[in-house]
Image: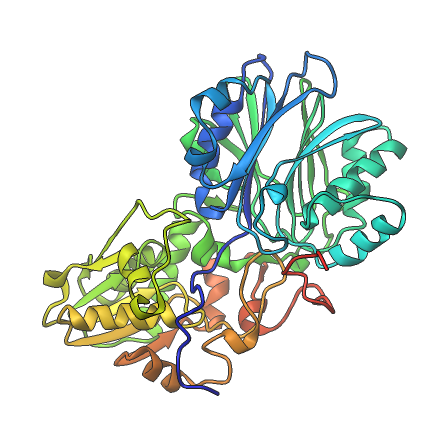
Length: 480
């Protein structure tokens, strides 16, 4: 095992997507509301975004859509939004974990078929997508994208031909697809939300005046002035029509212990102002920090968090330990997804562009640095070095997650074992690579406390997958 860190590889982890759907019973245009909701979900995907809308009182099958590569404010102009007329719609932000980063793979997907039109947005990864895709191809299906979301859309469309309603078609498709998925589906007269029976990805319902919203995270409801109604249950299909909300729970697990929410939503992905299945993300991160202070204490002068997801855990560590909480990093909020990567000889710049150290906050001090995770270790090593350059006397690293030891197949781009710094290395070896005075991770047994006892997926830490991992790597492109 090499004792050098590879600085050529991107360090940050990415969630795959964020989804949002809205139905305004009063007939108002919803595109601008979707746009602002997607802004609140931008942390879930920065590669591409899209909006598709329709008029429930207009001709069936007419969908207006716009999507493109980039951030929401790059893809949508006021003129584009003004041209999207309709009182029902779906929106999507994407980061690719399966399928390449191209405009063709941007969502929502819009399908025209014999029963009309479907628009669909998907968050997650299917573990059986390659088999389902091959099966469809051999029956004559022609794919326009390399993403598993199109496999779901095809199955919904095919089932709709044989079923009395689009929600029944979604239910039949869910019996075939296996893996992580939160879906928002727009038909000409209905808005449908569905969540896989394991509940890997978040999905909730909101209401504003006479509109209903289905969205990945509750923080987006706050942004658009909507009230939180409830979470979509794992395995539930929710159908919103002018008659109200209908629920189908026939696909929910009878043993709730089989559910497997992605614990990394609590650790890193979700915004701290979101609530995921009744558990405050902010509270979860405070809890992790408190647990670190109890399990891995160290004498120091200040506790600092690596923005943004390390901040709440750092506050929790400070509250539990009594060591003052400080701000050591200034984050550049204007670094987009496409900033020019520096040459190898200036490899530190990619981190320094995003973060700068407040020297007066750390000079001459023993610093406890809290971060949410270490993937390959490159960024963590650079940040430790930046603190030392700024005059920190000691740097003690505390991580509010256990060590990553296994890849994820459910919509998080955790890489193969050989790219993970914790694979085949001791804590002491990792500490030396980072250049820290000490290093501790969150105890894996503490994860249940973070989720307040909800059943969670810990496969990336434990190797215990709730679904049998695929025999082939589903996380790259499907094109061969």
